[in-house]
Length: 315
Ligand code: CP
Ligand code: NVA
Image (tube, rainbow, N blue to C red; front, side, top):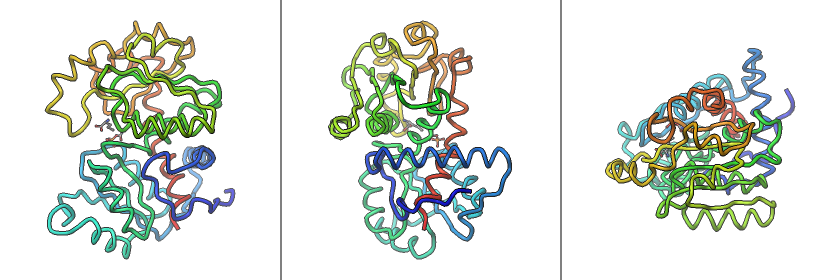
C-alpha cells in the first residue's frame, strides 16, 4: 500500500467547494486503489481502533450502509445513530452533541435537512465532520460520481456531463461544484423555477474561472441532453418536499430520461442516477436497467470513495 498522504488529515467535507480539484483527484486515486484491494480481498485495515458516528435525521440505504461497511473493511467501527434515538433535536443542542461526540469518536457523518445545522455541528466538533446529505449538498455522492465517470471513460478530460431535472437539489449542487473543481463541462437542464441555488452557481462560476470548467444552465431538456457523455438525473421530489410531489410531477414531465432523450446524447453516453430511483418518473425502467446505465457501479463506488475519504481525513 502506498503511504497515505496527510494533506487532508483533520479536514471536514461539508460541500465539494471545501476541497480543491487536486484534493478530489487524490481521493479518487486512493478510492481506485482501495477498490482494487477490496476486489482482491487484500487487507487494508488502516483505521483500526477508530470509530465513526453515523448521525442520520433522514432515511438512507447507500450512505448508511456504505459508510458502515467501509469503516469495518478499514478495521474500524461505525455507530449507527438515527437522531430519533439521540437527544439531538430534542433536549440537547447541536453544539453539546458535537462536543460530546468529539470525546468518543474519531469522525462524524451527519445527514440532516438544514445545511446550517451541519455547519453548526462542524464548528463545534473537534474531529472531522462529513456531510452525509443536507437539503443543499451531497458531496459524498459527487465523489462517487466522479470516480464512476473516470472509470467509464478512463479520464475526466473531455467528458461532457448533463444533469436533467431538479437543478435546485443537493445532488445537482454537488455535481456542479465537482465539475467546476475538476475543470469539466456540465450543462444543467431544469424547468424555470427549479434552477440551482444562486450560492452554488456563484461559487461554481468563481471556481470555473480558475479551472477552465464550463458550467451552463438551460431550461430545455433536449438542449441539455445534446452531445452528453453522461446523462444524470435524480428524483423530482427530494426528501422533505413530499407535499410538492404532484406539482413537481407536472413541472418536470418533459425532463425524464427515456430512450428518446438518449438519442440526443453522444454515442458513448452513459446514464447516472444517485438512487433511490422512481422508474416511470425521472427515469424509465428500460433506461435504468439498460445497457447504458452506470447506476449500479455508481452505487458501489460510494463505498470505495468514502473509504478513501475517511482514510485521508481521520487522524
Ligand atoms: N444516494 C444516496 O445517498 O442514497 P441513500 O439516501 O440511500 O443514502
Ligand atoms: N435529492 C435526493 C437525493 C437522495 C439521495 C433527496 O434529497 O431526497
